[in-house]
Each structure stands twice: as C-alpha cells, then as structure tokens.
Image 1 (cartoon, rainbow, N blue to C red):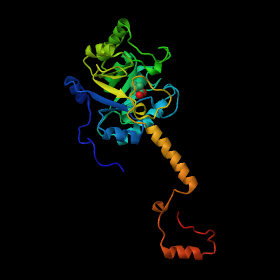
Image 2: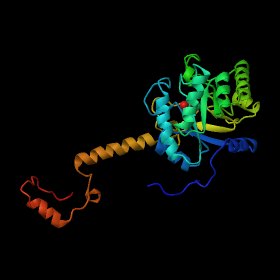
Image 3: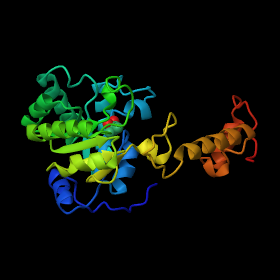
Length: 296
Ligand code: KIV
C-alpha cells in the first residue's frame, strides 16, 4: 500500500501556473506516464506535467518507433492516467496521422484527448502552424514539439541532434515564433545543444521545455522509463538514470520462480484459514482424494 504522503496539497497545474513559473524563473518538472500506477506515482511525487507520450509505443507496447501508435492506443492509456492523476497538467501526445491530414481531423482528434482521455492539453510534433491554429481556435491548449521530432525521424535521417548550426537554430526559432503566433501555448524542444535551445527559449513569450536540450529552458521533460531503468533498447546521452527498476523486477521474478519451484512460496502466512470442524467434514467426505501436507 502507498503511504498517504507527498505534495498532494498543491493546486492543480494550469496554464497560469506554468506562465507564472516562467516569469518567476521557477523550473517546471515534466515526465511521461502511460498507465494508472505510473501516473499515480508521478503525481504523488509532485511533478507539474504528466505527458502521455506516443513514446508509449516504444516504452510500453514494444514497437521499434512511435509510428505504429494509434489514437485508440493513446486514448486507452490516457484514461488510465486520468484516473490516477489529480494535480499535474495532463498532456496527450497526438500520434502519427492523427493531425497531418486536415485541420478538421486534427481538431476532432485533439478533442478526443480532452473528452475521452481526460487531458488538459495536446502535444503536436513539428511546425504544423495551420493545425495548431485550428486546434487552438477550438479552445484546446496546444504544446508544440520542435527539434528532434521522432514521428518524422526518417525526414531527419534518424535520431539526430538538431540546431547544431546558427542557420538551423534560426529556422527552429522562426518555426517556434510562427507556432506561438498561431496560438501554441507551450513548446517542447528535443535534442538540441543548450545554447541553441536557450536562444530559442529566450526569444519566445511562451514557456519552453526541453528533453535533451540543456538547462537554458523553462523546465525539463524526461521519459519515465529512461529515468527509472525500464527501457532496454538504448540510452540517449541526455538520460540520467535515477534507479534500475528493471533489474529489481527481474531479480524479484527470478526469486519468485525459484521459491515456487522449491516450495518456499506460498507459505503459511499466505494461506487462507479453514476452521478445524470444516476440515474434519471435508476429510470425512469419501470424495476427498488427497492428503493434506503440513506447511513447510
Ligand atoms: O512521446 C514522447 O514521450 C515525446 C517525448 C520524446 C518528447 O514526444
């Protein structure tokens, strides 16, 4: 059982909270979560933002990339997070092909994140100025995502650091300004040198967060499975592991398997009790076929 502690008396994170934190230079903490228990723990730990990322595909569904993730996958996982999360802002990540085709499809799918998935906002990858305007005009808070954008990784020739030159950084800044003017309220920069990300952040009015984008931004996002040691495919340079939950789980499963095989588990403390007189009755029944052994 979880103890009833943690910073749960804080107010729920809203846009105003995030804008105030930017003004007061208070760093914002964001983490991904994809399930009820993950969101419960993140919220209890006091994070400001929980992102139900389409990294779901890689961390939880076992895909090699995020491309196969569907709206149905996202909504289903958002619903688990919704039931757990009380205080963090919940942002739903629009998966590949849920917004690219038309403004109408983008708005409808963004709306589903709020209506069916309990999200407060949606995240859209790339410089999708038209789509962002349409979604924002529908009254939905949008976080844009620039720099390394995993859904278009083929166009970027793989998972490569972005904004390594002045020219590239200026292009990202131009895109960011256009998104801001279109109504985007939050920006996420991925995989950029700290100076380039800082340059973009300092030229915008909206809060700018980074994942692998250094410390000159208004806050950090980390993928939960990277942080806790539950992602096994690769580890990006910007990832800091705070624990090795994967190892703890594997070790526990090995011990469980061994204890079942050797008869150490379950033992008397895990048994339900049967009154003596009921046992007598059972033993007296001619259909009783086995000898009750004493617990080990
Ligand atoms: O899906 C996700 O978790 C993301 C992060 C990589 C930014 O989009």
